[in-house]
Image 1 (cartoon, helix red, strand yellow):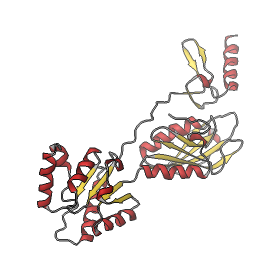
Image 2 (cartoon, rainbow, N blue to C red):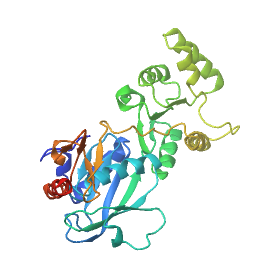
Image 3 (tube, helix red, strand yellow):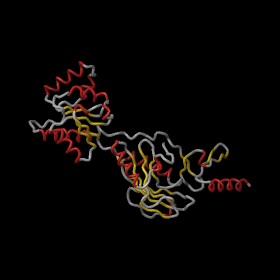
Image 4 (cartoon, rainbow, N blue to C red):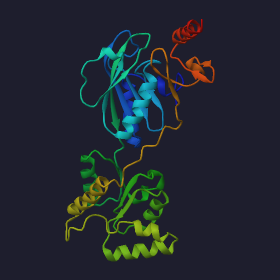
Length: 316
């Protein structure tokens, strides 16, 4: 997990967090956007404070101090996994009444005695569609996919390269016989999630044979969608665009383009402060205290001192 330096991810705040969110969405990285929607002081989190937790384990922004952060990380991971927004209430158990459905109340007896309600919103990656070609069909497909809020790039054949793609990209080759094979050879190197070709059945067989002759594997060639799109019979170029988009929407609904959210880059071990009940990250910064064969961790020196005193009084 990347915590960040003074000039790193955590330094982002205010509108900068939203700008970072837009950048992450464009790059196709899933993340959780957290916003403080209610607070009761004293608390370091303020109304409108925002933070981002990415699927790669980075934190951008600020929603609260040492009391809130471990809980935020844990709940953000769960929110990404479920893909459903939730309201997170942090504070003493008696601070909150009836919470709305979908809320999670986390008792936390932080010494500041503050409380927060944080809205966690998962932002999953939108499809990245790369359309290669300058035909009217390509322009129509670009326009339609943009209306679905997909991340769309329309490039001409000579401008295309495998560097435009990731393994999650969707590629539609609509170069209409002008360098189809070269574009496909470059696309296959990036192993995108989908490669479709706008071509007749006869042209598709010619392309298939050429790619095999050039060393493409049978599995790569068999995975190509040629012709691309649902078979709607005789159609105009605009209707071909509709047929292709319909196939892509159908495949997406079936889960073909769904990105699995990876676990945090580094698993974070946590423990419960035996005095206040707060979740803390295990490590030297959590004021460890060894008692027999067990090590206890605390949110602050005060809780550790209280625990030590209890042990002394109990053994006296």
